[in-house]
Image (cartoon, rainbow, N blue to C red; front, top):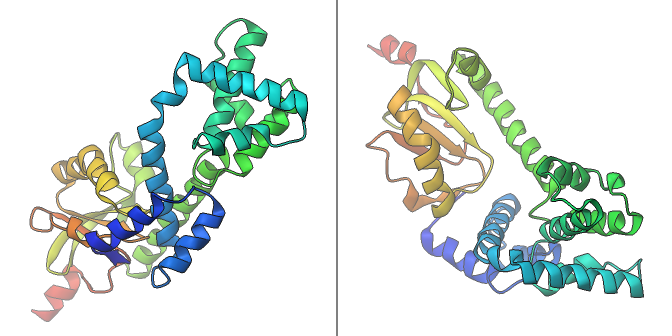
Length: 283
């Protein structure tokens, strides 16, 4: 699903006035009924992550961390069963999983007398039963299951969705009898930065030659697309020639402006692939 920049801005503006909850996602769907749910969910998640990045620093000052920790302690002292951390995160407009991380880190620091490793923190966030305090374990669990944009649960879902779309793309390439090398085969050959699939015989899509295809199970907004261009797409182009990026949940149509330079954007698998065999048969 392609959106114009104006349509995208309207959705982003709407999201600026609602809290990042599942209820807000329902409101978003009601407000923009013609857009697909998966496209709206992807935009919702990306816009929220931008907001968190903008405010990240203020939640990580020594004063803020201490305030959150003391509020957590006094909250659970009054009622250990209440969702103290989750309510605190919502009150200060911060992602629940990230609030859980701050308080867990501060708790372990007090217990151990040293700053805990990232590996330990991540492991405890993934499996709160490892947390040596039952009340905090429960509070952390409440935060991770109620966070729709951050945390170990969301990471697992995103990873699974990304993998699912790569499998889907592989099946479509096989169906079209296109021979390709997948990312893992390219890594085995010693390539470090590689697209998901390199076509062993290039094809033409809408009059453009394609050497490689990259699958993105997300919406292509300006911010993420620019980052991908800098970190991935132009280096693929330098190494392997022109290619195709599929944003399965759509993109801002004005971003598809590098076709002549060799990067084509689509929101689905192209139906009009012209193979070398095909064009030779016509001649």
